[in-house]
Length: 424
Image 1 (cartoon, rainbow, N blue to C red):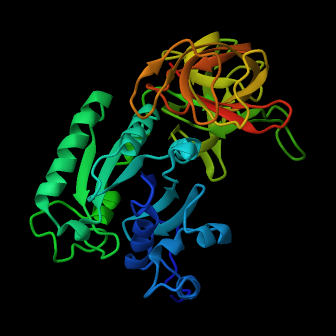
Image 2: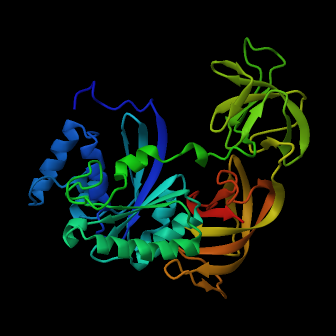
Image 3: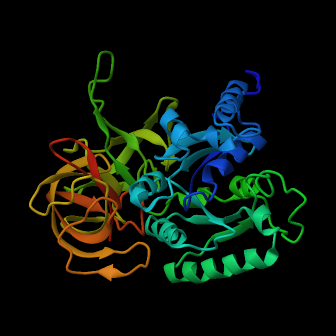
């Protein structure tokens, strides 16, 4: 691929999506097929993959190697972490998170899915729906991913049977209904042969729906941005510098949800001080209005005491402010959750010391069984917990607003991220 042909990632809208499935369902091969058939692979990358395939004694080109970013992964023949890849078509640009299928890597799926607008769940047509398929669907539901694509892969190994596809679709649809998943698309594919991935191929004439790439290009992502409630975590307070107006004071950050206009009444949380928007400033000049996910500087009509970590919100639709709340907690740390310890909780731009007051239950993510009498969460566990923080937080429920209803927990000693939470 020439320099001129290389993709320009400044154009088009962005779709972040995750691929997940059981071990050997073909996730890496599928992503490799997407990259290869959409002409998003550089010549030097393709040559490196061809050499790696030859060293492993395999015929042709192993497209799965296009997603294995670590040499160790290639040598083991598995994907052991979240691998991110980027590509673009004339219609849209994409960020793909390829997550491992092993149950012990549940935390990796949570990491990859946390910013995704769509999940592609692969199911091996020969094996049908497995426990891992249910687990991935549950986590996608838990994290509020708005769109789901069930790709029934390896259709070439079941003679492209419509009956096999229909049986898997019906089984998954029943489980999806229990989880409340509404936007689910089912596509039969062969990642190895390329059928219904980028091109339709000639082997699935009974399927009249779009290809996987066409689905990814046309799924509505604008609706995934929450525009109802204005939420603006303050990242930085801008004060006068050399040559600036002496009375300049602005609050810089990114609009996480909603929209704001000059003259709107706002509240600064947690103090609940009210004022109005005086100016909306960007590098290109002043705006009359702005919306998520723009980064702007807000100037207020009154001088108020606000700093990094505070949240500027609509005065008419403010979130609750609390020091205690319940949350779904996904434990990511290698050391179990310790109810006697303090942790750092980061929500938006605010960091507060926190403790876990108690664990209500742990979820068996394979069966959806709720297990009570739990005193700790270990790595990859998901459960409901009570959280206490020393400083008040402005909280939306995660179901209402993914941006302001989510948080991470950090080990004070190591500064490692050990938990990810969703406010109830």
